[in-house]
Length: 140
Image 1 (cartoon, rainbow, N blue to C red):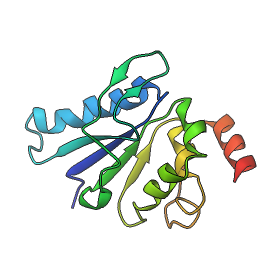
Image 2: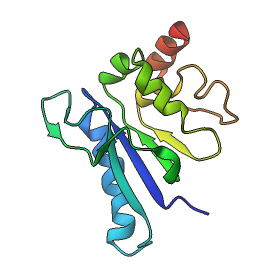
Image 3: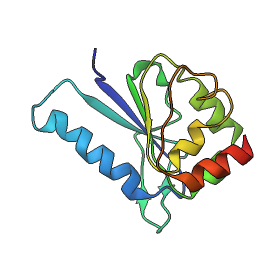
Image 4: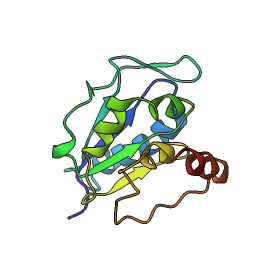
């Protein structure tokens, strides 16, 4: 079954383009009647998200239960560095498990490289961000 319910995780100091690019493309799947059953929710780590440039975004919910979603998308941005030390955020991501698809862009992959998220997963992670890989390897 292809993903139908998509969760987008947003957090302070994200790169808005990392979120909005995927969000816009995936929301059009339903909007253009390609697959009207596709739904999405924007889930934040905070009630108000301020990106790297100061742009504000109000998510649909904060730390919403992920069990009802088919795909989790994690944006990137400078805020990933702070989130890697946020026990609540890491524990939240761990609730995703390893049976459902997981996607990220840019430094969002750093959050997924946290202990027990990708390391214990059967997934084969890929990234094009060599500098992020080096930072992540040194950290974990």
